[in-house]
Image 1 (tube, helix red, strand yellow):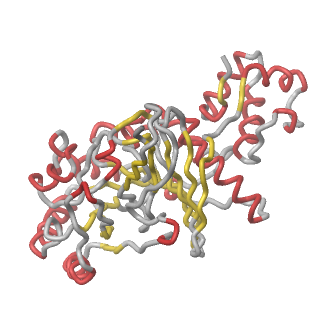
Image 2: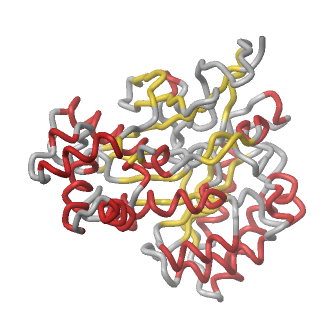
Image 3: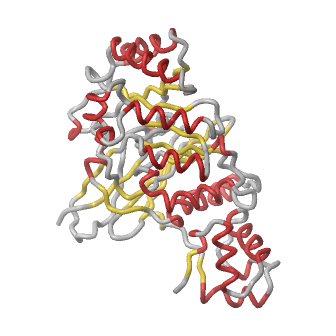
Length: 382
């Protein structure tokens, strides 16, 4: 069976090379060719022994997900739609800024969490992505953009696991991908510049702290359990107090001195002054446990199935002021990529679903990065 080398972190690749009768340093050479140089042809890898180059084509490949479409925004944002087979598609978004280049990556096709404000949750869960499909989004985007920009140095400085899916529900495939992102022989990203976003899978937050602590963003969206359980059903299993205690534990290992809390602003649902004061009290109580919080307020992009509306900006700013006055670092998301439907909550695309039917279903997913619309879509129907 042919192995996709994008599925391996360096330890996994070393084990693969050992199976071929090769020493560990060959794995490091191969790893650099794949991730630092973007090579796909083993004949390009001129410092590998000829005997190894001759073995590899029959035993291995280097394949990222297939591109369905690409759209470029006037503000420089780029979105790619990738076909991951059986009618499932994912989308990856690159957001350039003056001091960084951020890539938003998906971890699942669909999502099982079912948050009310997220259309991907309404669409349902299809499957976990493989490590190669997760990492392949970075591998493809990095080396595509280097060629286009005519650069040898790194283009993508930040990665956020904030696209489609709940990353911590695909932990076994996520972990090797994170390790490659951080590896100096791979992409060499700082732990501070790789962020995993979660709706609150408490046991896996604790595991991530032990295995590979990177920056953490938590989808909070409500200051009390009744409302949060309505918006984020996972809260019924891991309520707010348990979640914030896990965040305080995580902070002991975290590369940043704060945990980011995402708060999607929903008109008349979670945007009232009293709820802002509840949020202040909640975060201040857990500060005593060592938790330092940063809050990101996210304007909601409505979709019909949600039954929800976006808070007006005056309400958002009033909510923000209450948090800021209490000494809580608070930001309001800006929107990027509007002209290509790549801002927060918009999904689009055309592929054929596994049923073979051809009726379009365009879905929206509430993304968690800097106001981008993370785009995912599926064709279902006739």
